[in-house]
Image 1 (cartoon, rainbow, N blue to C red):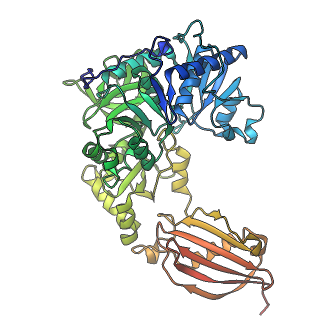
Image 2: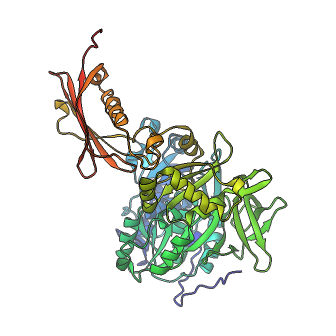
Image 3: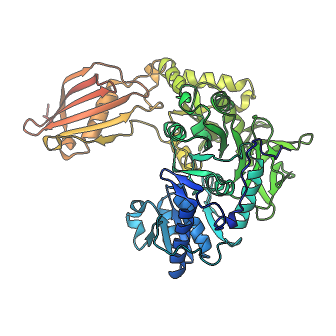
Length: 585
């Protein structure tokens, strides 16, 4: 079992979550920064919003916040008012409908709800400096039975509603407060994850309040913003996703945050060992958490070895090899679909991944999670997701290539890259289970919970990429017929084969087709093209190139001048489309 005593000498007092509004706690404590919010101001805002909810007879409130401190204020106010909170995972139409079924929506982003799906929504915001009596309202405690409803991601099936009580959140936060190796005073919490989800809710809300940590309000979704937010504080703890941590690398400005990172928490997916080693070199080794929305935290590790269950979490291996867990923050015994291998000498376990992520071929079993872990050790891979091919029922890999991987694809072609990665896997896996199907991109579309939607994976393997995703850019001469489009050449463009397999480039005829397709978005461009004048190809267009395609229509001459430029402004292709009526021969 892990050492559950904090490693720091300056240990903060722990305040149970249901007593966090106690008026005897230091009034000048900073609950949040950027801008600053003291405990006295924070509590006053909670009580003011609670009173408004009570006076309005509110029984259910939906929450959507970018500001983590305002989120904490709103959730505590809902609980203090005796109402139920619904935490929206995102603002997709189905979740807006879920919010509409609540009595009120509490938010700091009212513009998000301006669409047609939000008709009739009652939107309230948090008043940070409310006008109200200074006396503490009678009864500051949060009821242990207060409820927060979360939605699971639904990435592998139907989304489910999971209910967490204040008592469960309190028990989990107290257990974490006793276990984390950086439970010291004066920390600022910088987070790349939203408190609208279980990971952020546990660490940026419950644990931060329990240990008296100060919340940096904004969510830092990019490495640059994470480092900038850290540099602006004295001493921080990061609550981050593996996807973001894996993108930091040695080339960042680590000097600006030297000595400012007391701890790093990583949860929600696999953190590559190479990424953990980089963080250990420049900051601290990450403290990894294994858990789920349904179970809360289950186990932790900090050395990439066995997962060690928290003292209050009873973990057992079921007959089918999957994990079951029971703790003060679960609703009885929870049986998961995660397969594990136990080590009875250490009470630790190895996580093999979901049982439904184990495939069998020719009497051989392969863990799709293991394939991902092995790939993440290769310098060409920034992110990877492995699942059954939607049509062939064999392992398929959707991989985000690193800068080195993109360079390799440009220099050698995608077949050579896939072959190199297969040979890397062959050192650990039986040949019969090696992936045969590959798709390459520069970033995987993970959702806020770091999951890949099954529909996105299916699209990647069943719909050919024939063009960039075009975005029309502003033009000062729209009335003069000028239209400008930008896009990045996909790494898996379907035309990077045949003659161009070893040196992938976009054939000129394909570039001309893109011009024709974009022109067809406008009435003038739907005319018959009788010829192409002054056609020139000056530069290769290659995988991952950023390109700009400009069209200018001359109504008098009934011609459209086109130009394709690369990211450096150099012309790649140009010419004129001549419209008219085809003459009979």
